[in-house]
Amino acid sequence: MKRRGRGIACGWYGIARTAAMDRAAVWVEYDDGGTLKIATGVTEIGEGVLTGLCQIAAAQTGVRPQDVVLGDNDTARVPEAAHAGATRMTYMIGNAVVVACQEAFGKFADAMAAYWGVASSAIVARAGNVWVEGSPSKRMTLDHAVHVLKKERGIVIVGSGLFTSAHTTLHPETGAATPWRSYVFGTQIAEVEVDDDTGEVQVLGVWAAHDVGRVVNPQQVEGQIEGGVAMGVGHALMEAYEQRDGHTTTPAFAKYILPTALDVPHVTSILIDEPDPNTPLGVKGIGEPCLTPTAPAICNAIYDAIGVRMTHLPATPERVLEALREKRERQESAPQRKVA
Image (cartoon, rainbow, N blue to C red; front, side, top):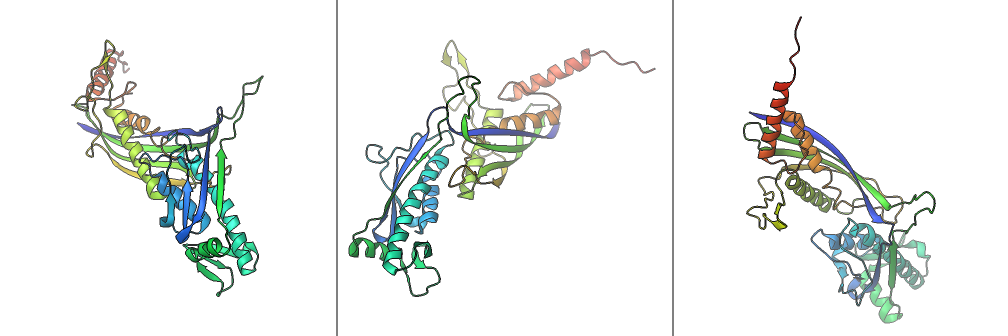
């Protein structure tokens, strides 16, 4: 018989370690054609950080996202951005981009204000155009503005930004410290169907609500959550690395089983847009936190469906059947209550 159950699990995750210094640095430049050049050692590993950085830079400087150019990321020539991992990319490098872009735009606004003879606070730039607020005549494209500043006035607009995790040391007596600069929180609900004849578990759906700070690109965040849930399904139900005498017995995907498209459930993502007050950008992260609650939620759903706790992952059909057998044996050996 197939039985359904639902389970819930919550998790939290720290971002930007402070026990050791974490940092990222960026250079930016308003370049010919109204483009913005960004130089940093960031490495794209498929999570879409480059797209996010382009959006962040565009919002801060007034250029269009498609006019942001991310240059060579060789750290022998550009500022260090540190490693790609630990859910730190958007948090560390995105904030460094903000700091650099704010400096560059401040210089740009000062230069354009001098050109038009107005206050710097009146300069507005958006979507590839720059203008004086309230003046219909003082307006031009960023392409033209950069040409005017570079070719006619000899001004090159550049900015630099450094963002750190604010390294804190342990208290010498109590050992107290702030191990992470920021924290993210998430809750997931899983619905499963368990066949108590075969032990097979199918995940029917996952609802995932995550606090990600300020959302830069909702589609990318949802994609990260869906990928994390897919990994969590594998962790919970099928991925088993086995060894014998120090050698793996699961050396290839024929024996180390991964989720396929048929195993991944429908994922409903709920983004909690709550900006981090400790950073200029307000972002947090989602890369690893979205994986944390998935397996516990699935295990709780299995318990809700058939009343057994899976304490050894993955919850393969063999282990589910073994847990059901042990449950029946306990029930049969339990003393029967006599009815008066």
